[in-house]
Length: 336
Ligand SMILES: [Zn+2]
Image 1 (cartoon, protein in one colour):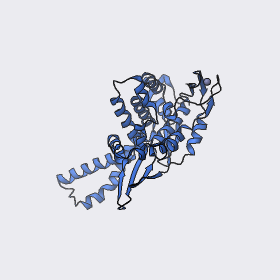
Image 2: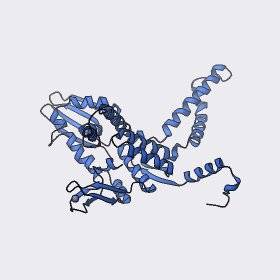
Image 3: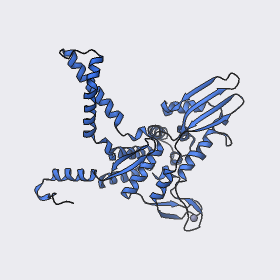
Image 4: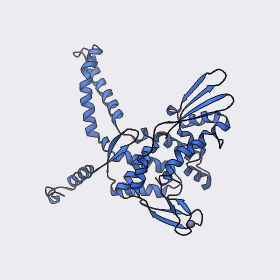
């Protein structure tokens, strides 16, 4: 701390202000795969960490609540959402765009209508600019979210010790997770779309697959929590199972279906659909195209996208019986 900071001459508010500014300048840059650039995050405060821990401990059965509070924390920590500088930029951009808009719309600035046009144009421009340029985790992918959380946890020493119950002997193991190793593995992921093709007697199906958006996953958890509100703990546990058939639908971005007899092609773009509609669409398909062990698309997703992201964890041996077990109870999404 430098000497110009003299707490005795300032009141509590200015001390709080000064500290919050200092902490906000300590940044961690995280590479965001789907944005293809680095984004700066500030560190987690004691208060924020306490709130996060409380939420996680108090809501073991409410994945929807934990998920949204983690997303809110990510958005809050992001320094790109520092309101004042973004507003300034938005206003400057609006000023620059205004003369062309006046010319284009033949606005007479000497009239009340002209003045109204200027204020309406400026307001709308600023609003759009801010929403286009804000960082919002809900617009990114589940892969990005896991990656950002990993780095936030690493930089803030959250949750680095994890425990898991050995599936073979029941022994409670404790491990210190090596975040840098996990992040290194994340960096090797190929995040381009994958196409999986399968056919039956009538159609050729091309499924375009990738990690789901955070918005869709959040919607899914909310819907699931509502659906399972008054059910048993066992049914609620299904929510934690990433290979659950319901969740897996979110990995399908697009479906092309070609009729073999007519060559007619139908295309469904799932990235713009709500979770409910995705579920309805998938449920119309022939059972064995979706579910079968040898050619079902969900089986392909489980093997090539979900198990792959879970494999970023080191496989550790149970210290009691020696059985190989993944660190973390189910996989990366359960842990984060
Ligand atoms: Zn064991």
